[in-house]
Image 1 (cartoon, rainbow, N blue to C red):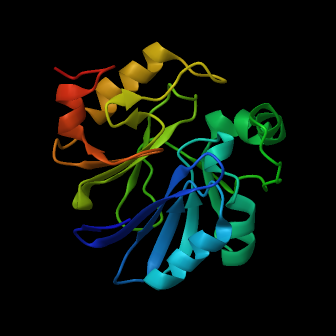
Image 2: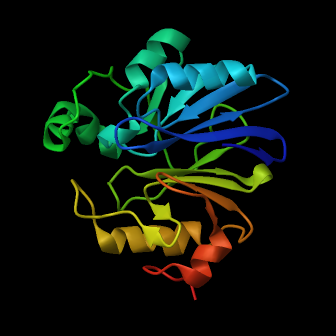
Length: 215
């Protein structure tokens, strides 16, 4: 699903056995792009990148659950782009084989991350920034592109729901704090790309989220 946002290319589509939303974000002027959460189907991702005429400069991850990272190694090999992750999810990245075994997914090794994301850090292109939003996992992050009014929230926030907190390192109180304190303070018109399922907006979730309402 390619959507129009001011000044950027945004293409979101499900990948992998658990149908994680992978998002390609690109600058149409410089031709630089990023892949968010390459959870599988590397050839499909590369075909979409080629379709948009982008050179991938970063593979960035909202967190390190298996369904968001499975194609990272193949994409790094084929694009040369470095892998970015928040350090607090390093233990999940290193436990990928265990995660795959628990969910019955074939294991495919991934290389170590090249860079550790930090809260409020600038992204490699498209004027985006990192927002540390722990709760679904300790190192969960969201990516905020203010100029485009676009938030890539991973499994922190969904349309009408929030990320589960019963997996490794999850914590509901922390998740609630992240959503209320960081995400619900953003522009209400901002489009939210969830880790699974359809888009929503910040305003829609503030007023109607069935788990954590903002008012």
